[in-house]
Length: 162
Picture 1 (cartoon, rainbow, N blue to C red):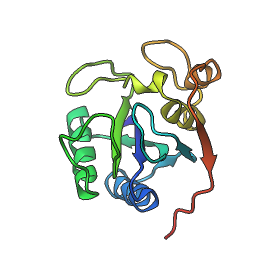
Picture 2: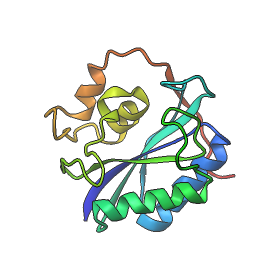
Picture 3: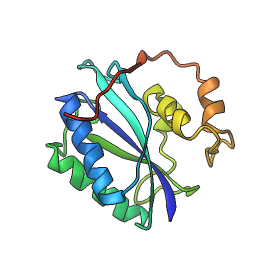
Picture 4: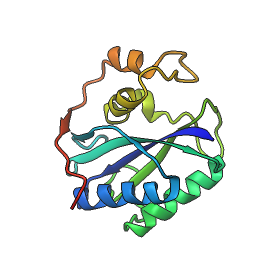
């Protein structure tokens, strides 16, 4: 079993899509470790605020199989392929890390957003504070503690049952 972290985000019908995406992750991976849910302003474009969290799982799937599964779940929740990179999302599921793997294909790992975006780093540091980023050599807690970019983000009360 390999430890994997996945970011979850939505700014379109946020509660429904975040709940559904997490439910589908549980159906495919089993036990999940969930961060708090955070609300943040859209980054890189003008749009509605996002709900974001990070999910930890263990899997026997390969990196490519994980990526394919995440795309299938996004598609089930109305993700439009080919939309602008910085635009609204019904559901965005990104593989952040796959154990300590460093690669560029089939996706970049660890994902660059870990060190760039508060909406990824804060929830990741919450559920995996002592895990070390394979490129920086720093724990996620240390990376979050030294994070100095200005991004509006705040934890919210989120009810998982509908």
